[in-house]
Image (tube, rainbow, N blue to C red; front, side, top):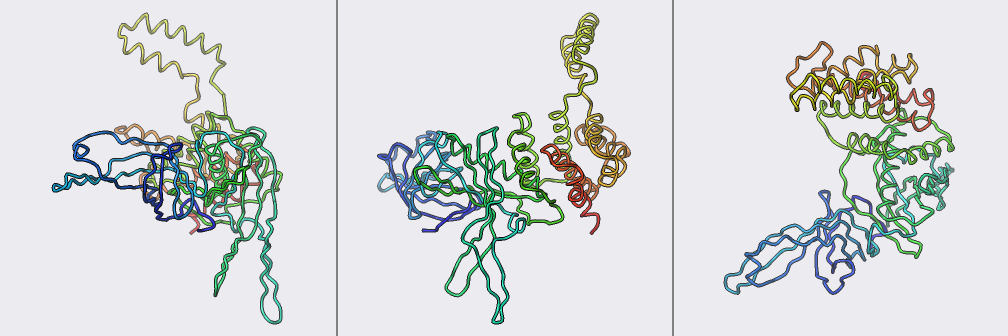
Length: 456
């Protein structure tokens, strides 16, 4: 039995499976984890009446299994229609049952993934191996080179996030794999997530994913979860398998910046303490945008939307104070209802006035640029007036098909690509400052991110 599994482990395993809590409904099946996903299949023979029946297959939700790889729990199990074959001679029907699985936990049985329990997860991530100083030592001798790999991990950050009462510890150690004729070793940073109170498996996985997003922001590369190992207080252990797509980048020294342990802990705390309104933006920027292959025009629109949303969520500015605006809006609505006798037009006009006190797109972008030093804006984006015009005019042209394109509208794929790099860098700059890093501390890394493709 393998010692561990990664999220993207691929395997085929025969075993016996049953809905959680219903061992008497067990059946033999085959569990396959591939790059496309996880699927469970089984076969059964029934009478001819089932061949013509059109029944929706039941989805058990959570299933348990005992396979050649050990115990496992299958979560978010959805039944799908499989093929059937009718034998004319015997009137028997061979039916293939198929189930799609969202998450497989290898090594343990779990009745309810949403139920609170006491435990922790230890995670590893791609893109971190060259970020931290390794624990291994290389010693040259007269006879050769001596390599020493410490069996103990070195803890670098250990703190508690008060917002969700969770302890987070970052350590670095060595993963050594010995073979008969060779060995491999790599320095592997690990992050342990341990809630102080009871928490569900779903909550722990969500925290691991939020750290993935934070590390992508912090390091400036697409960091991905590699392994997630759950350990319960009663000494049960399970490895998460959940095939995921997404770009995996190598660590880029120039895209990163130095940070003290206390600063890193404070930034992670701020990331986890973000209001519920800001969380969807975190998921959108470091989930959808960085992980999805998009046309450059679609990526541009996503980044423009993210910048506008970031300003709306972090700045409550309005054109006038709310009480003044409400008085103005009331009078305008009275005039609309007095002079307009078309209900549909009245509704549209009143809806237009409803949000008139919010800053427009131009004001929001200028407000974001105003948070940065003018010299930094000039280096990263060029002339701020031209940058804002290009962003706004191109956004309007793509979102209102049929209008005439203005002079600053981007046209070629190459222009879109280079402009998108500026948008990525600007958004990262603002979000790093939002979690507490100083503008001067991160500027060099942001400048590299913004201009690296223009320097090639």
